[in-house]
Image (cartoon, rainbow, N blue to C red):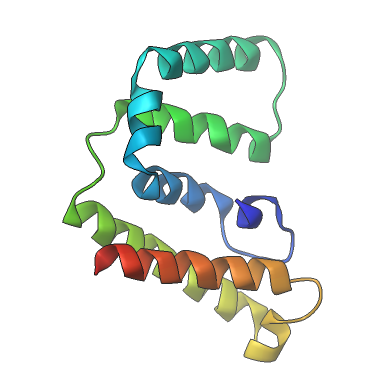
Length: 127
């Protein structure tokens, strides 16, 4: 979640939505796919319909809808897709930073640590 709010990265934040949907715990997935999740999505759609929501605040809503309509994510294929997305985000972040030293500058250290943690968690889920 820190990467979604950080500013020191060039990684596209829209790639975080499917990553979070694929890595969410089963209890959260079952809650979202249940009646409470459907009502939450309905209310979020109503708010989005009548009010302007900035792009980064819209990402959690899109993640909620993605989890509701997606098939069960606890499979090996979900872990592979998650690892591919995390690898792409890491590649995008470090290549646009220019060097490893610039990736750990004060303005982008939070984003760099978030990218490293996301990639590590994806690797652990794959194992």
